[in-house]
Image (cartoon, rainbow, N blue to C red; front, side):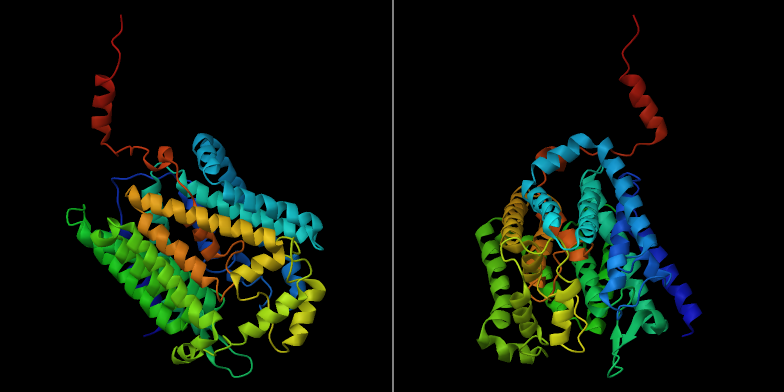
Length: 465
């Protein structure tokens, strides 16, 4: 098929999916679009990369230290707009923040850690971006109707990023593929810049689509059920296809485990006995950890097509832990992979242009030390508790939050995703966030016809004396 015709068909298909999944009876605020833009940028490519102004990924670390002025301005503008939106919703925001002190303590410590960093300015800029991640999650969670806002954010992300990734991979290889500079083997990147990022955003959008699909399948009386169900089924198929093409073992495994959790959380046998769900969660985490960190799992990794050393990750971890200068405090927010440390590690692994540790917990350790790791574990523990509280209260997105939280824990065994602007980190914050009942159960304001609104206002008016 000619690329131009494929482009026309895919754009029409995306428009059709958005139309099928429409819901005019529920309202969300215009501010949701700014949060969506933040998520789309960080789930694909930066603005400078889209218009090819950014540095190639294979260059040295110096361009990354300098950054792109265009990207900086876009991020600053979105953060400022987000903060303005939150100021107008300050009562809800304060309630949410008070209920999520572990997240605030983690970010506060990250800001303090910039003081002892060798690259204070860079660390502070990266911390500001992490503040932007939290800001956009708060914009979503303080919307007029938070549950509808969540659905729309995930659906719009999925309908845009996954079909466009397939379009780029199949019909625009210059945009959707990259090649190994030594072997020239293709790597499928879609709308992102590498296959791991493609697997990551597909994991998140795919789990949201699975959540919506199971929910609609069980609710026989849901309004416009068939068209919503069809749109989400198509999105699940796109997610499965992209995961198969990307060949990201970590994302695919997490997708399967997260989907199983979503399905189990909706079954009466688990919903009425949460202890069984706890056992499932522990079992999945152990299943993922056993072949990775215990020597007996080498055979299992080989059957999955993985090197027992996780493509050299275990050697990388040893070297990083050896080089880490401050076990208690770390090097400061987001500044470990800079300067002499980066040069030393790259010299050890000649030909491997490392920019991360491929383990989220080690990444937090080298940047924020043991204090940062403890604060992160506190977020996980409090988030796990709030997720099960949401399941007990039958909050609509409880099972999705459970899947995102558990898969984030597992995903970071082999990838460093607990950092700013990373989609797994962004939606980990959403999943771990405790939602006060004043926010969760806020009554919806139904969208009424104009004539009916006028009639109701007249009937409620106080008669003049």
